[in-house]
Image (tube, rainbow, N blue to C red):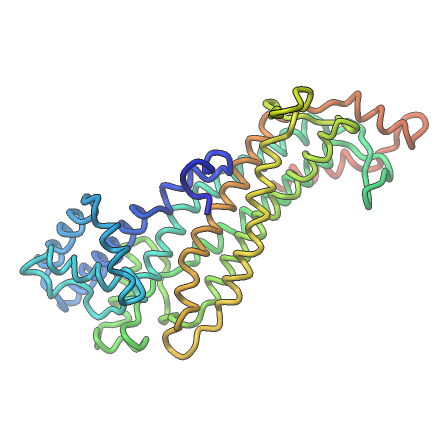
Amino acid sequence: MTNTGLLAPLSGTDAVAAHLGDTAWLRALLDAEVALSRAAARYALVRPDDAEEVAAAADRLAADPDVPGELAAAAVEGGNPVIPLVRLLRKAADGASGAVHPGATSQDVMDTALVLLVHRAAPTVLTDLRAAADAAARLAGAHRDTPTVARTLGQQALPTTFGLVAAGWAAGLDAAARELAVRVDALPVQFGGAAGTLAASHPHGPAVADAVADLLGLAPQGVPWHTERTRIGTLAAALGVAAGACAKPATDVVLLSQTEVGEVSEAAPGDSSSMPHKRNPIAAITARASARRAPGLVATLLAAMDHEHQRAAGAWHAEWGTLTDLLAVTSGAAARLHTSLEGLQVHPEAMRRNLALTTDGEPDTGHAGELVDRILEAR
């Protein structure tokens, strides 16, 4: 896991780490509980004053640096941190303890908190994805007519332009960012009660669920989705595609930076501990490294979609760390790619030199410039 610590800046996950760590989890869990209490108060299931006391107690717990560790230790017994959190919150709310966790089950709070984490982390991921796409688009515009050689199956093919190469990068990053934004926005609240029937909130269950969504700024659920995990699966796929969209230009930059090719170089290449002549494209390399972790995490989330009956034993639990790790590595890939492309130096003279290996005279780049224009206009 590269969310925090020594490897976080290297992997590009340092910016998103604050949205995925223990403090963020605690705040999201408490926010879900407070929203439940306030939503229940709207329909007279608890007293409004008690709901506000729950909110105040939640703030006190969120400010206590010992609470995350306490929850981590206590979560082992029941299999999730919501169970001990409810005990702590009820104790902190004192006379308003009856307004804590009204009509809910642990999964309602865990799923809603996970959705909140995704919503809070996603802007960081999307900002870097879009910034990388913008950097690629600027390269495309600047080098619309810069001839270079297209390579297929690792060999020189026909002439193209570097602008078209970079425009392809931008198109992929743009598409990935759009799809990810759609999937994040569609993630709903979770509120179903013990068996997904909203029995404990009858006759106001669906209305309470919608009120929780409204209070948290999340999409309404329609119906509880305790073991219907297509939303998690499609989010995982969108994050995996975004990581792959970052890996494509990062791979190209690594290959085009090779000494024998020399067609691009990063603005701040890395050196070597033993070979001072090296100028390694470190930002692209670390973008690839983060992206390489994504497919395995996506596979785990897809494999965990077989939630049995009305509450899964293990498949649900497998999602929490896997999804936060997937958010982290996708964010890291986007952040490091943005760094790579933002300062990428293009060497047209090397491109012409390499073109001359297989092309005589002025290279015919076909409709490359027109295709660049089409891609940039479609943004």
